Amino acid sequence: MNTHSDICVSIDIGCHNHSVAIGLESGEVLDEFDISHRPEGFDELFKRIERQKSHFGGAVSVAMEGYNGYARPLDTLVKLKNYRLFNINNLKLARFKEIFPSAAKTDPIDARKGLELFQLRDHLPLARDVLQEVVATPLENEQLKRLSRRRRALVDEKTRVLSRFQTDLQATCPGLLSITGDAENVWFLNLITAVDLLPKLARLRRTTLLKLPAIGKKYADIICEWQKHTVFGHDVEWVSPMIIEDAKRILELRSKIKSLESQCKTLMPSSQIATLIDTLPGFSVVCSSELGGEIGTIDRFQKEGSLAVYLGMANLDNSSGKKKGSKSAKHVNKRAKSAMMTGVDRHRKCVPESQTYYEKKRAEGKSHNQAIRSLGRHLCRIVYRMLKDNRAYEIRT
Image (cartoon, rainbow, N blue to C red):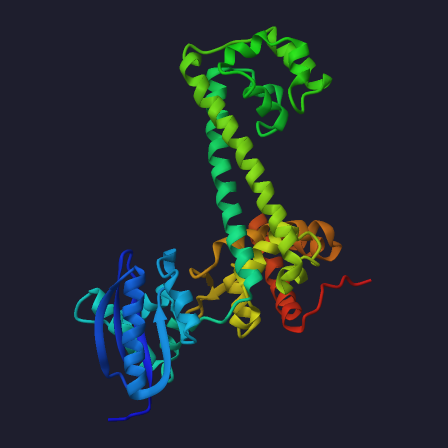
């Protein structure tokens, strides 16, 4: 038996338990077992890997799925052991299974499928695409990633709460919502939260209104005018607490989102990617920090087309015979795409050349989003070269 061979480890990630297969590059299976998602389970995994490594003496490569975050913190522990870590691309793995189906579908079989990928990756491009090596990411970008994702989650929650707040308020107290152009205005939310029942708003004196935060003479006059024509629904007594609770939650979310943005702004100068992207006109701190966190390191991408697909700015060729067409890529980072769409839309308003290109695409019959993605495709080439050459964005004069 070969006494010096690289060790391959494939882990089928589950919610509470993981199936593990350890083998050689030749495809020979050395060990199969299950571990729990607990410290003792991780210790058992590394003991068995080290046992095989001491016998064969080769390097260790570990492949696992990173989808849904169930691989954490196992992926971090693997990197701390200085093993090579590979991410199994779920979408491309599904296509691989269609071409090379197995007799059944179980977790141990899926774990052995990872060993097959190691065996074929040097000979089959499809297998090489399924196994993507995880490149080390700077710590500051990892922190930006967690902060920006947390911010995005709170923004989504605020949107849901605000929608419910406006719907309930419009049904319970017609006319109150019309005194403000935006239900998220701080002065309006402070007004709603100043009482425990909405009908009490109609009895608040002007002197009391002026004492509320962010309410000055202008808004006090608007509120006093509304008080002359107040109308409340029959369910106001028991719906009022719900509306007031939502208003308090919106204020709380606004504060937390602002705090996260402040943290991103403080951390961003230490991130090379975020700092360079921030030089693009229109890309604010939020977009730059979010893209810096999601990209992580430009070394992940061998060419600018890969970055464009990852950011959702490029389609895949879908031509057949005389038919020419394209299709949307499924393996897109949705968070990065959202940040890119926002940044590109603001960018074209700041740069005349970009605005001219956008208007040209609109004149060709493209929708707003299609024109933005088309412009974003060009910006991906610029961003890729900026990050590769460590150069800031320059505007032609």
